[in-house]
Length: 268
Image 1 (tube, rainbow, N blue to C red):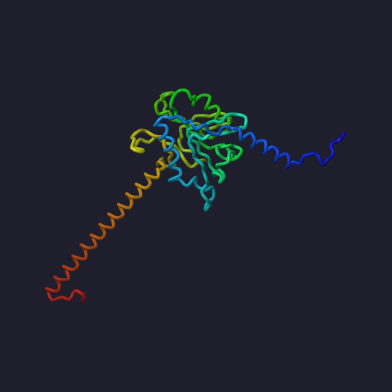
Image 2: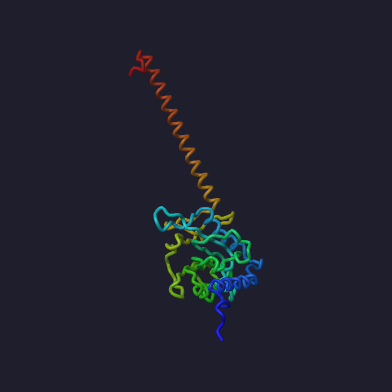
């Protein structure tokens, strides 16, 4: 017996049913456990890798002249859900280009980084090593390569994993290969080790940088630079005013001397 044509679901109905089933599964996912446990250095380091981009970076240069800057999302300790049936990976920091946070981001299916919602994996993932339990150079590295992360960075400030502090990988096929170039042209950013003071603490930090190796400043650093620039401009203006005043006084003295000699300076 053949099925009446009117009972066969249309393609649109099948898609709608699949989406409904997907959203139903999402409602049961644990997108956050509200129990982050990290050390003081890692907490500051993560913030130093997120705040500067929002404060001082407008996104990669447009691909065509006159085009707009590309949007981006950078986050810390947010889950990457690449499959509805597998647990997420939760990097210390990730950067994803050409995506924006949706307006309804309080909805369950928008609260975290679902690959099927954002349409792509992040472009860069950074792990800051705190101990040897994370296996950042082993199973975690394999997992990030498997889900399609183009660039993977492991920062090991306390040398928990090896004597090498900074490991930079680029995806080649389904695996990562080490690279020595810390600048990612496709992203418009690179990374560098920077020794300095952040939030009152002097240490060596991992920072984003531009193609020249200049660090992307924090909002506070940028404000300080602007204040210093304004101070230099004010000092330059003051010097110019003082020079003009000296020139005017010299001209007055010369005019007085000419008058003493019976010469009208206005006729010269």
